[in-house]
Amino acid sequence: IGGAMVRGVSGGEAKRISIGLGLLNNPRVVFLDEPTSGLDSATSSDVMSTVKALAIEGRTVLSTIHQPSGKIFALFDAIVLLSRDVDTRSGNFVYFGEAGKTLKGYFEKMGYKYDGDEVDNIAEYVLNIISGGVKGPSGGNELIIHFTESETGESNHSIAEGIAQPHLEKTDGEGPVQKLKQQSYYANGFLSEFMTILYYKGKCSFTDPFFLASRIGLYIMAGLLIDSLYATPNGATPQGLIIVIAVLFITVFITGIITVIYIPGLISDKPVFIRESNDGCYRTISYTSANFLIEAVAVACSSICYTAILYWAIAGMNPHVGAFFFFMFTHFVYSLTACAITLSIAAPLPSMEVAIGAVALYALLNVAIMGFLAQVPVWWGWLCFISYMRWGFGAFMINQFKGTYVDLCGDVKDPYSLTEIMTLASSLNNLGSAKNLNMDEIICGMIAIPTMSSSEIFSETCPGLSTVVGDPPNVQLLNSSFSCDENILRLLQEPITDDSIYSQLGSAILSFFPQGYNYDATRKFIDYDKWWCIAFLCLIFFFFFVVYWFTSVLSIRAVKR
Image 1 (cartoon, rainbow, N blue to C red):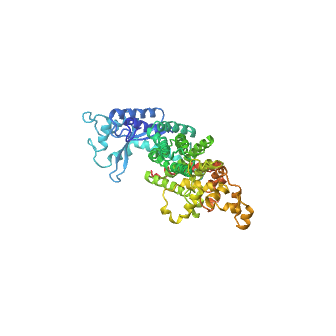
Image 2: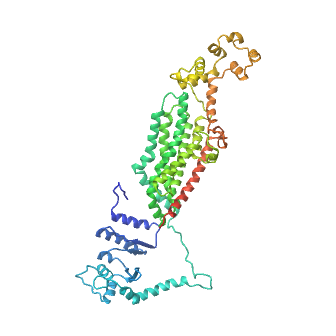
Image 3: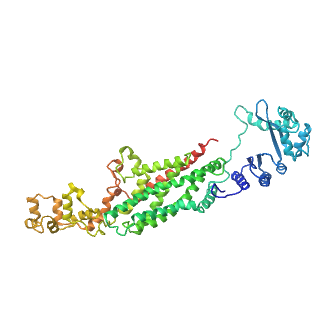
């Protein structure tokens, strides 16, 4: 059709398209309001010839017309002429009957001469009469009264009474004689409507470079941007672990916020959608289903591109192929849910600004309650169970850490020794003097302590202690003479291995999220299966898809016609 920035169809083509849209539900009566306005004479003739063809097919076509040419006027079978009543200032009939020579003869009998030198056609002749031209009255009700008392006027009145009388009469006090059977408001079935909208709207969308750039290109750019910030070959570090969790959070956050790109198209299409829905062109569910399926195809493409670009570039991501495809699937389901939520919120709202603000506010609320940033207040805890971001984040986290081996210090070349850690601990009251502290080296040095043998610990802390308690230490002596804790004694006897720590680290992380101790965080991610999180996402998706359908219906009813 075209728009402000794209050249589209001509004026005549636009008129014919408008008429075509009105024919989608195969109406028996067609009303047209000045279909030739703004068109030149040739284009007007083409449009009205199309309208005439519709009438010949058996439809009743009623059209208002403004200053028609003689050729166009000749296409009309019957005509209604109105003139303003002087007293009531309302439009009243001055003629209702056959067009052409019959109309001309009617006014000639009233004494209005047809002067071929003054007028070019019957339409111009009639307009001059009812508007006060020729020698007709510039005011008064002569034309109205004459038609009412004429044979044509009385005949029309009798016909109208004959049509209306059966529906006004009552029999035996039980109501109208007959009620007309109400046929379906729609000429086509759901599947036909759905496939038609899907084909034409889908073809238009996927051949539009702006649509492709906003739906797919934006995710490609987001993936490349995250790679440029966080991609590193050395992921086996505490900092690398933080980056992995941060990337999962960013994925959830950016996917939820980026859905505002659906709003401009939704708002711009709303006038057409409301008009065509009121005209009975298609059902609301047909439009919403087709529109959402088009977005779902774009979401699938964007999820594939985003995951392929991001996943393997971030060191520390779960290296299993199954984890990669589950990440992609989770992103797809989560994106669909976010899309359904955005469309359901924006559909009934009156403007783009209000819709974007409402969607952004709801997304930010979900960021706050997803369990990553902080403990959720008790009064907001109930919302966590229906938070799409919490379940999406949970699925990503469980896929990344549950049952996996997390190499935390494999790329840390020089972790702090026990001596350095004790030195740092002794200077905690003067950390301002400490320079170039390396978090990776400090954390890995602390994790290495329970893996050290007793001789290593003694040599770095109290070298002379081994002569007192022995090496290996005399556990009975440490227990009876020094009252050492049982856990300390166990570590001195059987140091923990790095593998045993790293194999349990993922479970420990899942036991920390969602943060907090209120009722919403009683069960941690370690207590869930990743497929349970997907199931909750699907339930939220289906709920909001139904809401999208109902809010689309609401947007139609909210318009004052």
